[in-house]
Structure formats: structure tokens, C-alpha cells
Length: 302
Image (tube, rainbow, N blue to C red; front, side, top):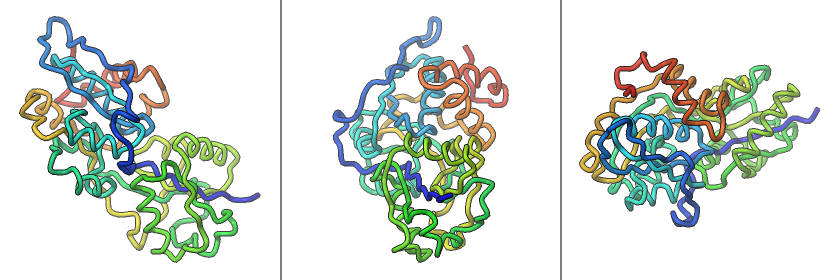
């Protein structure tokens, strides 16, 4: 059986498109504000639906912010570059799950002066090289000399992703250049390949990240990275345009209190992405808050 080697490059797209050219209003925005709540203004959340950390937290924020009186509009984009551009320009008020310390550091170097850090909700985000739990591989070092077995291909998703750049650094760090070609693809195509391979108990290697629901759903394990080529752990941040807290003080006060650990975040993402799915994100958040809301001191109830 021929083995496959995949690298999923899902984070941090290059800023090559204009905001208006690749964005659209998501279906989730409402202006309910709760019964009798005063409308405190409109907050636009910009996110990439295929990056499910931002998808999950966007709908969580929509739920919570509307309950304290804000109107929330969802702005969906296909690449991170336009999202950071829109955030810096004030066309988008918030990015609800950014990786500014490492994965998106290039964007912060470019736009950081016009962006405000509202808070960190998760402390242990990580880019990884992973294999199914049934694989005999234990370290990235084990890939060397096995290029022919994996067709010499590293298959990624969006070509300008920050994870793509990190993977490109990983390849020479482990002497894998010449054996593996990085081939870009899409998140949907990657997940299809991942499901097909694991269903058939085929060997494959993927570039993944944590937190991400696919790790648990497909039974993946991280390969050891003794060279540290995939970078250190980083935080997931809520970013706003410069002056966000001054413009939306009650929103900023709530947002900076939100903290999630591995189990809490994992249950939220799994419920949004898998248990409920596309078009039912708000229902998923309702169900998650019903089950876990009492675990937090920041949750706003109806």
C-alpha cells in the first residue's frame, strides 16, 4: 500500500487580496441585543470559516455580546491578509482568534500599530507535524530517507498560510529538502484526504495544529520536534482595531475575561463543527453554554 504524506498549512494567509474582494456577510449576524437591552453599537467580527478556532469563538462572542446589548455582524473572509488589513483599517472591528506571536507575526509586524490586543483566551496553541496513532513514526527525524514511500509530497492547503512558511523552515531543518515537495491545496481537500487515509488505516503525515478538532476526531499524535522547527507554543488572542476598547468598553471588559483550557475549547469546537455543523453554529453555542456555562464566571445569561 502506497503511503501518503500530507502537510496541512491552515493558518496565516498572505495579504494579497483587498478586503472587499474576498469578504462576505455571514448569515449569523443579528441585532437582538436581548429583551429590552439598549443597543450599544455594532461590532463586526471578521473570521475565516475554514479556520474553526475563529469560527467557534466568533459565534460564542456573538452570543455573549448580543446579550449585553451590542449588535453583532459577521464578516467572513477567505484569507488572513485581507482580514488583518480590514482590522487595521477599521473595516473589521475584531478578529476573534488570532495567532499573533508566531504564526501571524508577519502581519503584526505590518499592521500591529493599528491593532489592539483585547486578550488571550487560550495559552497553548501549537503548530505540529502529526501522524495517526497507529503509525510507528515518533519523530519528524523519522521522515528522512522515506520520501519515496510518501510519493515525495507534502500536501498543504492555502498557499500563503503561516503554517506553510513554518513547514518550509521545517524541511531543511531536518534535511528533508530534495525528498519532499510542498504541494498546496485547501482545508476541505486536506480533511477529505485525512478521513480517507485514516478510515483505511493508511499511513500519512500531516501538518496540524492545536487546538483543532481533527486531532481527536481522526486519532492523531504529534511527532516530536527536537529541532524546534515548528516553533514554540503561542496564545490565541482576541484582536481589535486600534481604539476598540474605547469605542466598545463593555464589550472589551467582557472579552478580556474569556479564558478556555484544552477541554473547554475542545468541547466548544467539537459541538460547533461536528455535533451541529454548518448553519447551526448559534444553536451549538447555546447547547455548549447550557452544558458548560456554569464553569465560568464571565458567561452572560439571558
